[in-house]
Length: 183
Image (cartoon, rainbow, N blue to C red; front, side, top):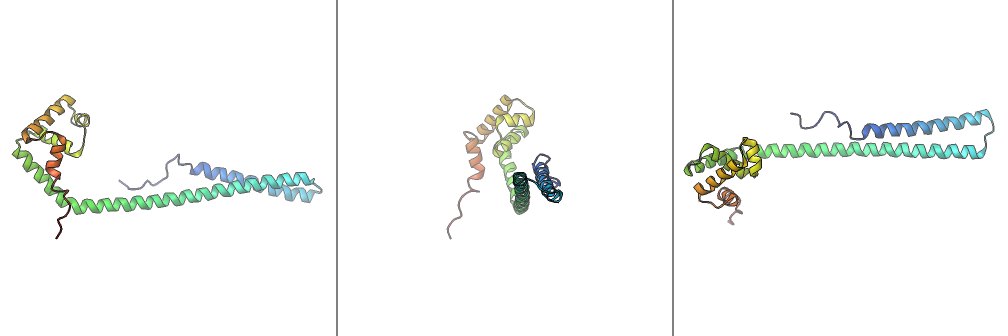
Protein backbone atom coordinates (compact mmCIF):
# COMPACT_ATOMS: atom_id res chain seq x y z
CA UNK A 1 0.00 0.00 0.00
CA UNK A 2 1.51 3.37 -0.99
CA UNK A 3 2.24 5.77 1.84
CA UNK A 4 1.05 8.82 -0.04
CA UNK A 5 -1.91 9.21 -2.39
CA UNK A 6 -0.99 9.61 -6.04
CA UNK A 7 -3.56 12.36 -6.52
CA UNK A 8 -4.93 15.10 -4.30
CA UNK A 9 -8.36 14.51 -2.84
CA UNK A 10 -11.08 15.76 -5.20
CA UNK A 11 -12.40 18.35 -2.73
CA UNK A 12 -9.12 19.95 -1.60
CA UNK A 13 -10.12 23.26 -3.22
CA UNK A 14 -7.16 23.51 -5.61
CA UNK A 15 -9.15 23.18 -8.87
CA UNK A 16 -11.73 25.79 -7.83
CA UNK A 17 -9.00 28.16 -6.60
CA UNK A 18 -7.08 27.77 -9.85
CA UNK A 19 -10.27 28.30 -11.87
CA UNK A 20 -11.23 31.44 -9.93
CA UNK A 21 -7.72 32.78 -10.33
CA UNK A 22 -7.90 32.16 -14.07
CA UNK A 23 -11.27 33.88 -14.29
CA UNK A 24 -10.03 36.98 -12.47
CA UNK A 25 -6.88 37.15 -14.59
CA UNK A 26 -8.97 36.71 -17.75
CA UNK A 27 -11.27 39.55 -16.66
CA UNK A 28 -8.24 41.78 -15.97
CA UNK A 29 -6.85 40.96 -19.41
CA UNK A 30 -10.20 41.72 -21.06
CA UNK A 31 -10.36 45.13 -19.38
CA UNK A 32 -6.78 45.88 -20.51
CA UNK A 33 -7.67 44.94 -24.09
CA UNK A 34 -10.85 47.04 -23.88
CA UNK A 35 -8.87 50.03 -22.62
CA UNK A 36 -6.43 49.74 -25.53
CA UNK A 37 -9.29 49.27 -27.99
CA UNK A 38 -11.10 52.32 -26.60
CA UNK A 39 -7.94 54.41 -27.07
CA UNK A 40 -7.62 53.25 -30.67
CA UNK A 41 -11.30 54.02 -31.38
CA UNK A 42 -11.11 57.55 -30.15
CA UNK A 43 -12.14 59.57 -27.20
CA UNK A 44 -13.51 57.78 -24.20
CA UNK A 45 -14.66 59.52 -21.06
CA UNK A 46 -12.26 59.69 -18.18
CA UNK A 47 -14.89 58.12 -15.92
CA UNK A 48 -15.24 55.13 -18.26
CA UNK A 49 -11.46 54.64 -18.36
CA UNK A 50 -11.17 55.02 -14.57
CA UNK A 51 -13.90 52.43 -14.05
CA UNK A 52 -12.22 49.95 -16.40
CA UNK A 53 -8.82 50.52 -14.79
CA UNK A 54 -10.32 49.98 -11.33
CA UNK A 55 -12.14 46.76 -12.34
CA UNK A 56 -9.03 45.50 -14.16
CA UNK A 57 -6.78 46.26 -11.17
CA UNK A 58 -9.16 44.54 -8.73
CA UNK A 59 -9.43 41.48 -10.99
CA UNK A 60 -5.67 41.35 -11.45
CA UNK A 61 -5.09 41.66 -7.68
CA UNK A 62 -7.62 38.95 -6.85
CA UNK A 63 -6.25 36.64 -9.53
CA UNK A 64 -2.67 37.05 -8.32
CA UNK A 65 -3.67 36.60 -4.66
CA UNK A 66 -5.48 33.38 -5.50
CA UNK A 67 -2.44 32.13 -7.43
CA UNK A 68 -0.24 32.97 -4.44
CA UNK A 69 -2.63 31.15 -2.08
CA UNK A 70 -2.56 28.14 -4.41
CA UNK A 71 1.24 28.18 -4.38
CA UNK A 72 1.32 28.35 -0.56
CA UNK A 73 -1.19 25.48 -0.37
CA UNK A 74 1.01 23.42 -2.66
CA UNK A 75 4.05 24.13 -0.48
CA UNK A 76 2.09 23.19 2.64
CA UNK A 77 0.97 19.94 1.05
CA UNK A 78 4.55 19.16 0.02
CA UNK A 79 5.76 19.88 3.57
CA UNK A 80 3.04 17.66 5.05
CA UNK A 81 3.91 14.83 2.66
CA UNK A 82 7.57 15.13 3.60
CA UNK A 83 6.74 15.09 7.33
CA UNK A 84 4.40 12.13 6.86
CA UNK A 85 7.08 10.24 4.96
CA UNK A 86 9.65 10.96 7.69
CA UNK A 87 7.20 9.87 10.39
CA UNK A 88 6.40 6.68 8.49
CA UNK A 89 10.11 5.91 8.07
CA UNK A 90 10.68 6.48 11.79
CA UNK A 91 7.78 4.17 12.67
CA UNK A 92 9.12 1.50 10.29
CA UNK A 93 12.59 1.86 11.80
CA UNK A 94 11.16 1.51 15.33
CA UNK A 95 9.16 -1.58 14.34
CA UNK A 96 12.25 -3.17 12.82
CA UNK A 97 14.39 -2.37 15.87
CA UNK A 98 11.71 -3.54 18.30
CA UNK A 99 10.72 -6.69 16.38
CA UNK A 100 12.99 -8.99 18.34
CA UNK A 101 11.96 -7.48 21.67
CA UNK A 102 8.28 -7.70 20.72
CA UNK A 103 8.70 -11.32 19.69
CA UNK A 104 10.32 -12.04 23.07
CA UNK A 105 7.51 -10.21 24.84
CA UNK A 106 4.94 -12.28 22.96
CA UNK A 107 6.69 -15.48 24.04
CA UNK A 108 6.87 -14.24 27.63
CA UNK A 109 3.13 -13.49 27.57
CA UNK A 110 2.37 -16.97 26.27
CA UNK A 111 4.50 -18.59 29.00
CA UNK A 112 2.75 -16.56 31.72
CA UNK A 113 -0.69 -17.33 30.27
CA UNK A 114 0.22 -21.03 30.40
CA UNK A 115 1.27 -20.65 34.06
CA UNK A 116 -2.10 -19.14 34.80
CA UNK A 117 -3.83 -22.00 32.92
CA UNK A 118 -5.76 -19.61 30.68
CA UNK A 119 -7.95 -21.14 28.00
CA UNK A 120 -7.42 -20.10 24.38
CA UNK A 121 -10.39 -17.69 24.60
CA UNK A 122 -9.12 -16.22 27.88
CA UNK A 123 -5.66 -15.71 26.35
CA UNK A 124 -7.21 -13.87 23.43
CA UNK A 125 -9.28 -11.67 25.75
CA UNK A 126 -6.22 -10.98 27.94
CA UNK A 127 -4.21 -9.86 24.89
CA UNK A 128 -6.99 -7.53 23.75
CA UNK A 129 -7.26 -6.12 27.28
CA UNK A 130 -3.50 -5.48 27.31
CA UNK A 131 -3.83 -3.70 23.97
CA UNK A 132 -6.43 -1.39 25.50
CA UNK A 133 -9.60 -2.59 23.77
CA UNK A 134 -12.90 -2.14 25.59
CA UNK A 135 -15.12 -5.13 26.33
CA UNK A 136 -17.50 -3.95 23.61
CA UNK A 137 -14.68 -3.74 21.07
CA UNK A 138 -13.43 -7.18 22.08
CA UNK A 139 -16.92 -8.65 21.75
CA UNK A 140 -17.23 -7.12 18.27
CA UNK A 141 -13.83 -8.45 17.18
CA UNK A 142 -14.49 -11.93 18.57
CA UNK A 143 -18.18 -12.02 17.56
CA UNK A 144 -19.27 -12.83 21.09
CA UNK A 145 -21.46 -11.07 23.59
CA UNK A 146 -20.10 -8.42 25.91
CA UNK A 147 -21.27 -10.54 28.82
CA UNK A 148 -19.08 -13.42 27.63
CA UNK A 149 -16.06 -11.12 27.29
CA UNK A 150 -16.65 -9.66 30.77
CA UNK A 151 -16.87 -13.18 32.22
CA UNK A 152 -13.70 -14.28 30.42
CA UNK A 153 -11.90 -11.16 31.65
CA UNK A 154 -13.02 -11.93 35.22
CA UNK A 155 -11.71 -15.48 34.78
CA UNK A 156 -8.36 -14.11 33.60
CA UNK A 157 -8.12 -11.81 36.63
CA UNK A 158 -9.15 -14.60 39.03
CA UNK A 159 -6.68 -17.15 37.60
CA UNK A 160 -3.89 -14.54 37.63
CA UNK A 161 -4.70 -13.36 41.15
CA UNK A 162 -5.18 -9.81 39.91
CA UNK A 163 -7.95 -7.33 40.68
CA UNK A 164 -8.53 -5.97 37.18
CA UNK A 165 -7.23 -4.56 33.93
CA UNK A 166 -4.84 -2.07 35.53
CA UNK A 167 -3.11 -4.81 37.53
CA UNK A 168 -3.00 -7.06 34.45
CA UNK A 169 -1.24 -4.33 32.48
CA UNK A 170 1.04 -3.46 35.37
CA UNK A 171 2.00 -7.14 35.79
CA UNK A 172 3.54 -7.20 32.31
CA UNK A 173 4.63 -3.59 31.86
CA UNK A 174 5.88 -2.49 35.27
CA UNK A 175 9.45 -3.74 34.82
CA UNK A 176 9.57 -2.67 31.17
CA UNK A 177 8.79 0.93 31.98
CA UNK A 178 11.11 1.48 34.91
CA UNK A 179 13.54 4.37 34.52
CA UNK A 180 17.11 3.29 33.80
CA UNK A 181 19.10 2.58 36.93
CA UNK A 182 21.87 5.09 37.69
CA UNK A 183 25.33 3.70 37.11
